[in-house]
Length: 247
Image (spheres, one colour):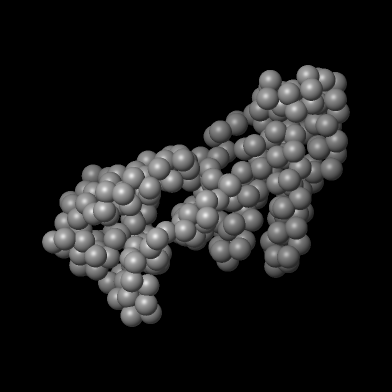
């Protein structure tokens, strides 16, 4: 089932994909490219090992069964060379023994083929840190007052401005609330605040802020570290502060 929401929090990251099937190469490349990810594609485990240093990937997708050097041996060699970033095994054989073989070779995770796109996004959320979203809109007010935003309010700039003011009034303190919930270990309320903020931001066209809060929700679900969650909250708080300054 194709996800209706393509994550954008990994834009600009690079993934090395080792996959010998041309059709699978095409599908994986398309999905990752949709998310703004730079893809380096190779067809064998040996090519993956050779490409590793030059590509400097943030994550490796490694088909387990390939001609020549298979994914198990390739992952083992990558780990022996000092590569410490995530390696995710890909295989149509999804038995516990297959998964254990991947983990024993030093892989971080495993995805069964045919790959479900939502499981793919979940895997990225588990292993990659959000990157680059804050740069999409340095000044959120610029994103807010544009033709697309005006179209949502049928060209009524006055109504758009009032919606902006209402958003700021309701959400200006959300950064502080999120931080407090994190420090108190109240992940249920942390999720609730993030979810409400995400919806409000999307409603009035603040796409970058909505993407940040979506990334926060995913990180909470993936039991990310407090450090990772706090980084996202700091970015969200910065966006809200800029919006407040322009209200």
